[in-house]
Image (tube, rainbow, N blue to C red; front, side, top):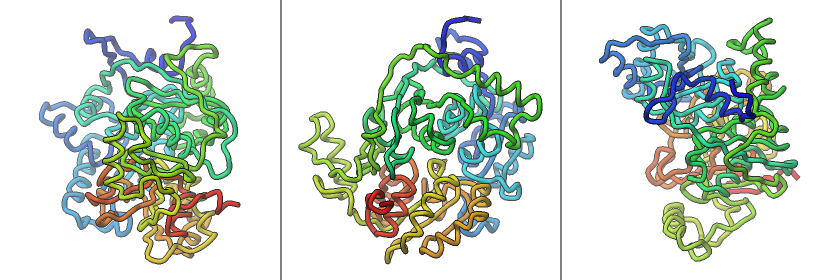
Length: 470
Ligand code: SF4
């Protein structure tokens, strides 16, 4: 083995390369494969057509998240298409001896919330899932790829995927985050600065004192949205916080195996003095509570800034800015703070974890949901829900006028009954503000942190969380 200093991505890549292909791509072995009901049925069908078995059923884990209603779970589901997907994943997991974390397991949830909770994601591992936001799992020092349906087929059949080797950009965030500024604001700020395509061809290594100070759930928020900046994967080097989070999780190594694993995990972290293909630095003190005003996550500004005008932007960006302004119907040049909302959504694989709910509940205690606002709180998993109940959070939300629901993707992508209507404006903790993302072709999404969404629900409009937390 080479003694040259390597970063984590290089080490993980080398350790999982089965062979280099004539195309120049690497054939990579996948440690953990996560599946859900939306992208797996076609993959299983392709396997059946070729009469192929699942190669390593003990390395694939399933749950149901996108289509599951967050109010009534009664079967059959009211939507026949959703019910058909549900039945399909039940059949496929049973027939192929794959563990299925359904509601009866007590661990059902958004796939990117469930995986880490179960200890299925470990440092130095390769992870794949037929879902864009698989980058979430890089928070553990794993290299985690969102893959397409034909690659889901490949992983089921061979436990491998073919990938082009990625360059690595180190994103350094140094210093203390200011009050009211969260991991969500950091990643929106990074994407705003580098653009939605800025990371194409790269994996992002997040480092620096701000990242080291983040808890695991904050690191998951950060890595979750990496894909929105064009980078295929994002990761944080494993440290004592990583190991503390993983200890005693159901699938984490136990006893002596734990000690051996920790040694190996530490060895997979980027070597001191290793090189990167690029490096970008951010000063944490310059990051404000951030909110999107447009139709992609880079169209974001500090809550105290004004929505841009087309004239204020470089020539090459004007068409995109004009399209976003027209769709969002916000006042060009006007403040984003004060923008009225119709719906508030707290949940998703970005911000549906217990620390997110705690932070939102803290704000919910400051008032009542404004007249006419629909406000939803959706735990990311049944485990998050159990913890929230143990801490009395549902009662806090309900007393403030929020609806507290059951675990699922809910209104993030709205492949279930939780959807926007007409051109409603939704303050959302999720990760995409694309046109029509939340179920209505004219619905409008403003991305922000859970505390900011809770504050907007109470005020009825976009609010600077720093004013509320004073
Ligand atoms: S919460 Fe949203 S982004 Fe995450 S897996 Fe579900 S639909 Fe996808």
